[in-house]
Length: 154
Image (cartoon, rainbow, N blue to C red; front, side, top):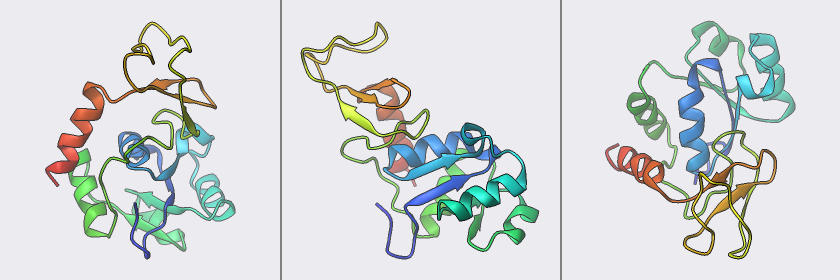
């Protein structure tokens, strides 16, 4: 996952929601400001400190106030991912998801005899995971392949 000098516990500001999903899929424990009612800078800084998380932001003022942060300059996801790779982040898909791409909760594999929602394949046909917090179901489908392709191009 991360190099020794890169935190595996992150918090991202409100401008980085798509990046949060990518980092979660790479196995990083990634809190996102909008998911945690931490839109205000003071709340985000408090969250980073109280949970010992590295802050990732595009906000120069917020970066200057944070004791431990990474300032991104790119607006597009490809550029943001390149900046993090240059900062030492290992950006490849985890063999199995560990964090929900939607809420960052822990995920567990669905037993092959358990029913899945209509939007998900049967766990009897392919491996499916479920978030224990929000109930979202995940599998290695077209979105997984799309993220993998983006990461491979870095």
